[in-house]
Image: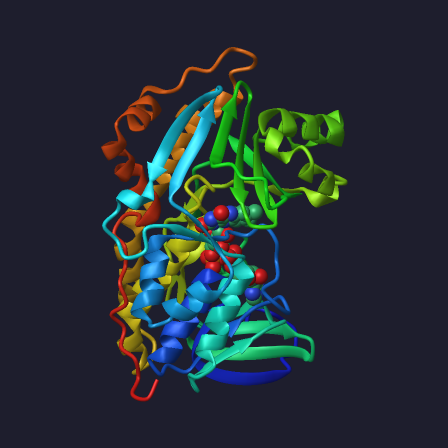
Amino acid sequence: MTSGQQPGKTMKVRCCIVGGGPAGMMLGYLLGRAGIDVVVLEKHADFFRDFRGDTVHPSTLQVMDELGLIDGFLKLPHQRLQKMDGLFGGTPVRIADLSRLHTKYPFIAFMPQWDFLNYLREAGRRFASLKVMMSTEAVDLIRRGETIAGVRAKTPDGTIDIEADLTIACDGRHSTVRERAGLPVEEIGAPMDVLWFRAGRRPDETENVFARVEPGKMMITFDRGDYWQCAYVIAKGQHEAVKARGLQALLDDVVRMAPILRSGIAEVKSFDDIKLLTVAINRLTRWTQPGLLCIGDAAHAMSPVGGVGVNLAVQDAVATANLLADKLQHGCPSEDELDAIRRRREFPVKMTQRMQVVVQNNLISGALRSGDRPLKVPLVVRLITALPWLQGIPARLIALGVRPEHVHSRAAPGS
Ligand SMILES: Cc1cc2nc3c(=O)[nH]c(=O)nc-3n(C[C@H](O)[C@H](O)[C@H](O)COP(=O)(O)OP(=O)(O)OC[C@H]3O[C@@H](n4cnc5c(N)ncnc54)[C@H](O)[C@@H]3O)c2cc1C
């Protein structure tokens, strides 16, 4: 064991998933469905965290459909987005139109991530082999020679050693597991950070503008029913400078860009109501060690561009179950078999990150650095706006992504 601490209790499972985010909860569901003895550890007591990815894209809706979970899921409160419209230096533009897609669910569902995760948790309760342990934080790895043999975790009742044939890190972009395993991270970088906040919304306030770009400023607003979810983009490292200018100066800028927020912005009372997302793009060059696999943000942190992080995490989970569920019936897959996940998923991840970098460097960086100079709508945006049939291309990239996954892992008899 790597830790000198005395262990408390122990338990043994075939597969230990660290992290109950979209990747971990979806993978737990799929492995439980396949009858694998699996535990998901989540360090928080619940899933209630504001300003996580709340976008459920058609690729994930399709997966929910394939699992027979879609009807109940779409009964949960959500909003639907099909057309992504923006104002670029005051000029109306259309970025994407999902109604042009030939797919069963041609919209993005906006749903609080905790509703999505709670729904998966409830749906998974019927699988006897799936256990979800809340308030349980993996703090160290258990090693047997060169092999990762599970994790040591902190619980409200003390420490527990969870021995597992396979440990899967789904613990997000600040992954403890990948850090303890010493897996190398390739940083790609991002020129911006994002400030997230909510502004109140009256029922009579409607507007279809999703993105606003002005000289030196950029903002996204989503209609979330009784509030507007707002993402104000700032140049990387400028958070302290924004705070130094004061809250009122920031809110004035926001309302100048989006007058619809004039009354609701009163809900932002201090910088405590504004959450900083430090944008990162990175990926592991190696996703495995013997007995260990990383997926989701733990393997590749995504930029918020396109709002695809949740969906890539779900796609990783589906690919992992497809490739490993049968093998896990018999024990831990070999490292080469584990590496099949990277070989399958690395291409979509790299392609998506490359597109995010192109948007960041050409559109976002340019807008943020433009000072007071008037903005010219980029040619590609002008073309997409002018030629509606082109609007299906960004829609497809955002909605379905590269190499969408379908559920092929088997369901154990009776599940
Ligand atoms: C502010 C913000 C806004 C975002 N907006 C969007 C968006 O609009 N659309 C979108 O698609 N994506 C968005 N993302 C990204 C998206 O949330 C992630 O890409 C996605 O959630 C990744 O899923 P994951 O399961 O891999 O990791 P995460 O969602 O990060 O889940 C990791 C889980 O592991 C738990 N955990 C961490 N460490 C441990 C440990 N040691 N032991 C046990 N549990 C642990 C965490 O509590 C968490 O529940 C946003 C991210 C942030 C931070």
